[in-house]
Image (cartoon, rainbow, N blue to C red; front, top):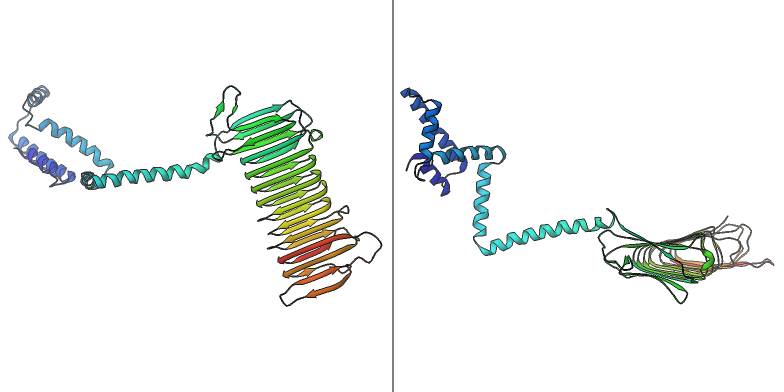
Length: 393
């Protein structure tokens, strides 16, 4: 066995590193070249080619040609990878894979890494990329609308044309009914003069925009588990919006009777007119602006900001954990009471205050008395933790 064979044998047995093997081979070749130069032997290009052919025809025990290839490969490998670190990592992985327990741990690590990448990209699928869109026109006559969306936003806007329902579904949802060219898990149809739009899809987000002629609809019912509801420039005899998690916005909406409730979200009402309006926000803020409501009821666990018009006859506002700010018309007679447990009662000097009670528990109650001949605006305002501020506009 010559010197190169010994070096390769030591490398295979792990006694030396690949970098040490390369240095030994380089030193050995340098010594051989020096001895060859001293003897003065020189070969032509043809002689070297013939000698190389003879060497390649020898038995597999000679590693002369193989070592040249190995040297070249290792030389290129050294340019990009530290040989000592690569050799150590190879031996470490090899020893672990020899034991089934370690192999299982390695594969488990790969699975956890894959799951972490998969989960981190899941939320982005709801907000990026193309979406499935579909437009459905409703030619049948109807007088009532029922919208029930489990996961998605609902927007209702007016139109003077045919009623149109637009659906936007997150991109990975692919369940299409080829016969109807429609989403399988979404219902959009008219039964017994009622337009029903239903989606119970939880794994995908279904956003709905309904364009409807206000003159066609008497009653509208909207329910949702997770999403915002926006209704603009519509008129209904009966309006109900009841959602679990999301905001409710009513902009220039009119109705004889209206009810809006959200368990977790804000309620915003701007403009419009109502005979009876009830707003409930379990966790959130209630805001109104330019609101015309004869009878107003507000229940909230958060802050309440109201701006009432002259058409308002009575308003009952209660909050558990927030302040209440009410703006009433200038010169309008007031009657009723305002109270708080922890907070302050603030009111303008022109309001006739006849009675004020303060109990040991901290309850502050202010009575509003109407001593004029005109019918006054009845206010019943109370909060437990927060101030009540009453001012004119």
